[in-house]
Image 1 (cartoon, helix red, strand yellow):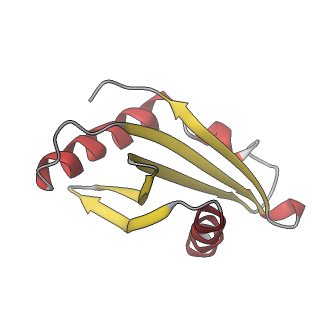
Image 2 (cartoon, rainbow, N blue to C red):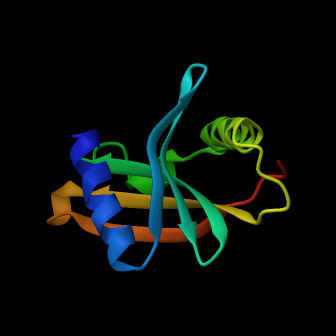
Length: 114
């Protein structure tokens, strides 16, 4: 289900004019679902897809621990690609399959210094 949710998120972001740079970026034991560019800003996107309401809303699953993991991975991406002096942000795309694949898009979902 995660792959389907990510594909829905990619199409959604592209319709908004966001350029997809990379999908499923892996570094060490972690993964960033989508790396994108939006008007000159490097965007790290976490996608969460809910198949039921049992565990609450999918955007709520991006807790502090997950945010820190994404930030570490983002830092690795920036270093590996020799990027300097670039604005970054962290977005969340929550796909609710229980509501006909309703999307909740949260720009600047969290902030961590990297």
